[in-house]
Image 1 (cartoon, rainbow, N blue to C red):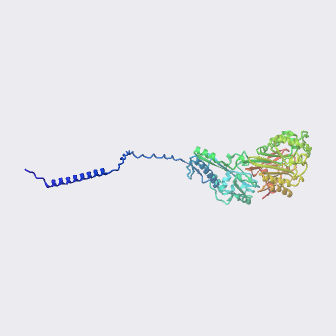
Image 2 (image 1 turned 120 degrees about the vertical axis):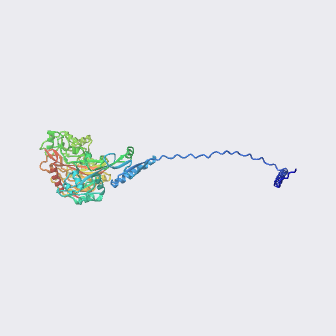
Image 3 (image 1 turned 90 degrees about the vertical axis):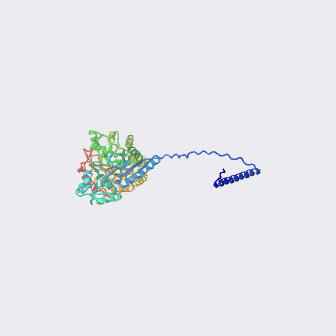
Length: 585
């Protein structure tokens, strides 16, 4: 039995057959083409094996450790100039720290690492002392801080004692920064017509215009000769030994906080102190010394140092103590007598008194150096030189006598120059003696004036002395005023009348201080006049090579020889007398 195939199957077989046929034809054609080609075929390029690795993760750069910022806060309540100065210095310190990979910055946040403000603890940066001062012809010598505080808080009558009548409430003058400083110390100022805030440059003129019921508060280093420095609670800022812990008007700006940073700031920021004892010089100028007659008798009876025992500290505490010794020493000097007259010499043993008071500078303008012969002056000068003392106003010959004496103390350049206007025992080219005021005319001040100008140009504070005509009254004469003023006009900051057996008044202005006569000091038997038994020691204070003013000490000579400090009543009476015959501009 035959089986029939389905039509679909036959059709599929037919299609497959056709496909196989086509493939075969293509293969044959390929073989024929290959056989017909005569060109050599290149070797196939070997395949390069590529190995794939995972993508590397980049190593992160290390994150820098943050540098901590050290902060410094400056109290905004400080006076403007202080803040600005401190800010500049702290900025300089911060720049230096940045170069050492540190960060130091100022901040307004009082919780800083270091806080700079008024305080009693911490590293000192600023010490600012305020002085209470009045016009020079003020009788009162000081105030109590408790009274000043009452005045500050609205009771002007608390300081009425500063006025000449002791009853008128005075007016206080101060500049804006001083007001800020006092506010930090005392609290807010009670507004009052008795307190006037004026520009710094106008404080002194405004105060003088309001005298005799006026005073001021000024920075210590801005004092000048027209002021009288007032003590506060008995503390005298013109004394080296002043107890500053008891002085109430000193502001101390200190750094507190992080000790290590404070130490660095203290090392980098120079401390500011406007009463730095290393910038101060005190010169004690005295009157007539003549260790003869009654004074010498008492020295023989009671000891060579007896005359100075009650005022010694006025002299020994000065940096330079001046003695105007009018008499030469002589080993054969006759024993002293009350009736020795005016021909004078001194036993060489008496030099012990000058040692005792700490003499540094001897003035030789006196007119008794030759009383027993000029030959005793050179041995006297040699005695001074042996002690290490300088001398001026006289010398071994004319050239030596005319030379100024210059001394530098704590940066203060001080020059002494003097001449004998009155007469006798003048030095010559061959003989020792006192200095004439000019080589060819003892009364011509031209040489002194020219020398003063030269010394001033060299940066010296000149102290000029004149052995002038002797007057036994408090007033000056017209010619005396002209001659002394000529030396000041030339540039002398102090002019001293060395001749003055009788104390005389003053002439004080912005250019300098004149005392026409300081009176006897170690020469006390001129009992015919109270003025001749009155002595003054003028302690002149210099600071940072500038004249600040005079601290006047007053004494009365007793027992023919011994000055004793005046009582407050005696002193007030003397000052009133002298101020009444003085001149002020």
